[in-house]
Length: 327
Image (tube, rainbow, N blue to C red):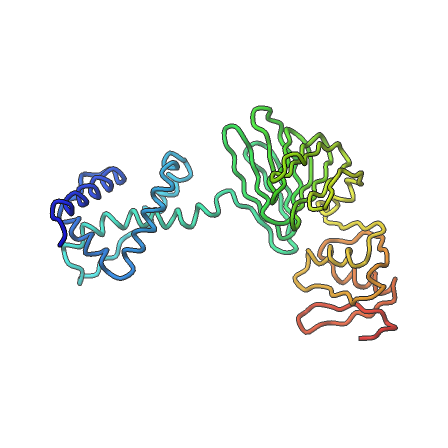
């Protein structure tokens, strides 16, 4: 049997919490009773718990200008629709819950996308950040921007991006890609996330690259150097930065690239892929420049150059095989 005094204490605490949150007069006992009745309806208790958790986890955002604007916009467009079959007793609880639910739902949809930028397969875009930094996103790329008073941090969740960083000595600029972290103050560099690490290419300036899981593994790059942290024994190597970042100009430049690797790179921009048949042909070196996403031009060029047969596939792709081998 429940303790009435304990129940009253819980009711008082709930009323105080709602009063503080909503900035309105204390909630009445009738409203609390109606609220408890509402929570007994299947599914409502779980919904309330989700709102409660969200509210507590986002308390620190209460002064955020974007949050405040979003809240006001949501409340202006949120109007509770009361059916006549509702009892008068439930009405006060609904008045309290609808604005809170509206805010919670707005936050549920908005918070996960805050600072999120992405591209689809074959797409590219340039993002201008608040500090003056420009980020060019390659195909099928997603980043999250997290700026704070003492740090500017970008999380490269997938894909590849070219960063032209605005100088700010008081706020280091860091890019996190899996287990790799790149730190720069003002520079131009390219980061491509790979399985087990990242490939970092420096175009201008200076960057420090660190394996966050083994901090003794760190490197400082100079322009024209690249490091792939996914390799067994990573070390900076000299590269042609213009070739490595040619994607940012809408081109893919290959210089002595094995055909299998060239096909894999072209496929990053294609929803309908190229399939290269196994065999010696996959090792043939490709040289040339191709527009990103132009599958037909690439297929025509390598088919003519290496005597390949291009066979359309039922899924929209195309299969390349040596003519002497057949289908």
